[in-house]
Image 1: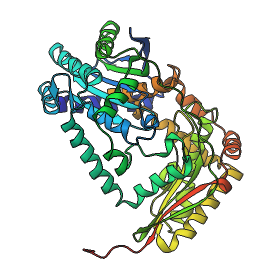
Image 2: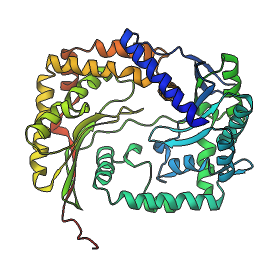
Image 3: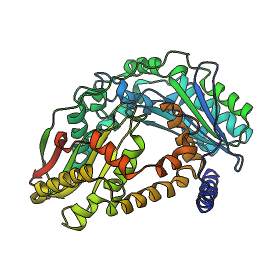
Image 4: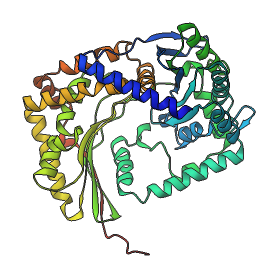
Length: 445
């Protein structure tokens, strides 16, 4: 039943998205907002087309809150559904399956979340809400569950050690952020994860899983009164608590290259610098400019210079990851070991030329059309809308953020892009991480 509802939702959402695009109507959905009795912010969009509701509860409880115990935030979040209230993990899963609902968790550097999708039929909604309320407020953190989840994470970390790309990504964050909380990977290290226990998770949950540290996003076939009652019920068991303390701004690292030998025929290159935070005044010029430079795939400047003209890399791209504090700006390529130096030199020159000259007018127009043309797909289903609401609420964007997004992209000029890149992006100060160059292991070796 839930699979059928999901398919209907996607089909309806995609159809609506393309109709909006064809009609030129790209405004976002109507968002309502209020606070729960405990102090959590709620964002709600009524979507009566299907008898279902999507909920995402977001906490300022990502890995930036780990301190010295790396992996603590991610494992706390993962353990929420491994036993809560009177139910074991299997019983929670059975409750969800019995009503065609789904429950999931996620943890990043800034935020941790718990998501629910369920039908709005009264019995189904009652069971789903009762279960989610217990998952949020009364996780058990039983030793056997902790051991199971911890061991699974240790296996995952060992597998990640075999991926040059993952090793390079983690090393880049460490080199870029140094002692800042963003430096460590949310998944932790084998040593840190092995040292985490039930008491650590209980303390972390007690501090950060509180009403005033939460945002609730709701999208579905409810009216305002029903949505208010649902939000209040979901968080009723949480203490009011306090918002998490601010995370400090990261300090720019010293430029330089950080080579790491890895047994493979391919070298992974990461180079970049601190980029932008969520409310950066240069957000839109840098977003649009980066789309021209490297985030639009094979048709980007980096793709043209590194891949198409010289055949140095099949995959090359650039990215901006805006977070609560400055996230990274980066360029990434995978190339043959013998071509690593040349590939990096071309990447550096391409970026430097773009900073100096700015975007070609046609490429800029193409990038803006690509960004605005894809916007309806970002709100094409209840699930996608609830993701957007969670971001708007967590980062404190205005409620008209989705309404104004397309106009702000369209308003970006070539001069604004060139000015923002000249002031903000400095290839001479880039941090570089190069992983590869070692001989691959022989089969069976």
